[in-house]
Length: 227
Image (cartoon, rainbow, N blue to C red):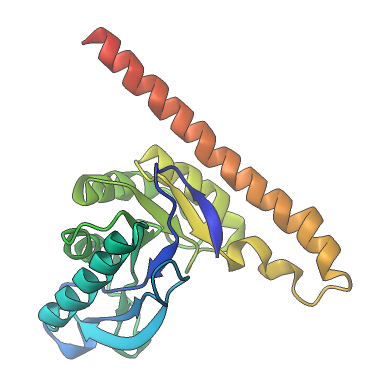
């Protein structure tokens, strides 16, 4: 897992908690997996727990709060991740249904005060980025602090543009793995492919984030001068 996060503190512990979704029927409730730290300063790991929308809120609160407290005491940043899924991996009833679940998860999880929130790209549909900016702006209003996008569920060819648009909507960067290196697995010279393709892709993604942050800083400076 690698990426660029525009934050004053590095994310060195990873947790992968909850999400929630609207809908009371079991078939329409979302499932989430939760992870805990692999020890202070460690890379983190998955605890294998699962929860559903509208339920297990106390367990989620205990898990995420404990994780954030461990990270705080260890003097490292806490990164909390929400993944939304329907029971049995059933399809979402609509794009809005999924978007609302992603935003709802962010609202619940960031209420515990993590250093950085990691989200699925808001508003993304394969080959369609038209709603990413609006949903990212909505995410920014809900989170109210640093958040980044992950590559889960995003076509590799779409990821760079998804990162750019999400940053325009308020994201602070990305964390990704397969979106960077998956296409070199199994090639004749993987080391060369990682160097020539994957490293270049990572550099391009980092530049997208840095460019967005420079623009954001410039805009904030102009607003301050005008004020």
